[in-house]
Image (cartoon, rainbow, N blue to C red; front, side, top):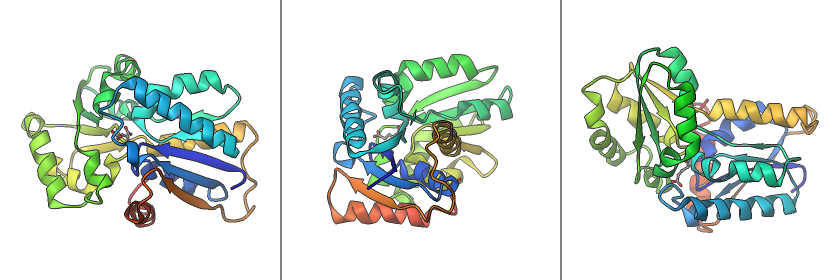
Length: 261
Ligand code: DGL
C-alpha cells in the first residue's frame, strides 16, 4: 500500500471513526487495523496497552503510513502523548470522549459518559472533566463487557439491550440529558442504547470531530491527496485472522455508513 493513513483500534470499534474519515477524505487510502486478538484493551494495564500501541504504530510507519489515527479512546489515553513525543513530524490524532459539545448543549444537565475502565481512570479523562465538566453533573460509567457484544457481532441484539438496561438502570430514574459514547465500539450499539435511555436523550460521540481533526492535520502537513486523484482504497487488517472477523469488519463499515456521522 502506498500513501496511506493507518487507523487503529483494539478491535472493530474504530470502524465507527473510519466511516466519517472516509466520507470526508474519499480520495485517501486507509489501512484499518483492529487488534481484536488482544482485545479488550480497556480492562488491561495502561503499560501493556501503551507498549502494544507503540509497537503497532512503529510497524505502520515502517510500512510507509503518512499519518496515524488512534481510533480508540483507551489507546489514546494510554499512548498518544508518547507517540507525539517519539514522532513529532508525523500527523497523529487520537480520540477522546465528546464531553465538550454535550456540556455546551446541556448546561446544568445530567450527563453520563460511557467508556472503558482505563479511559475513565486515566489522567486524560480527569483533565477533560475539570476542563469541560462545567456546571453539569457528569457521571463517568465504566462499561466492562460491553465492547464484547460488538466484537462478537451482537451489536443489534436483545442480549445487548438487556445488558444495557441492567447497567443503566441506576441512572435512568433520575433522568439523563445526554450520553457521551467514550469508546469507539459503542456507536454500533446506538440503536439499542437509544431504546433504553429514551428517544429524548441525546447521544454524542467524537468520531466526526476526530475525522475533521485528521483532515486538518493532514492538510496542514501538505499531505492530502489531491481531490480527484482517484477513489481511495480501504484495507481491513486484524490480528485476529479469522474469516468471521474480516466479514464483521466489512459488514460494520458498509452497513453503518448511513447511520454513523
Ligand atoms: N474501542 C476502544 C475505545 O475506544 C475500547 C475497547 C476495548 O476495551 O478494547 O476505548
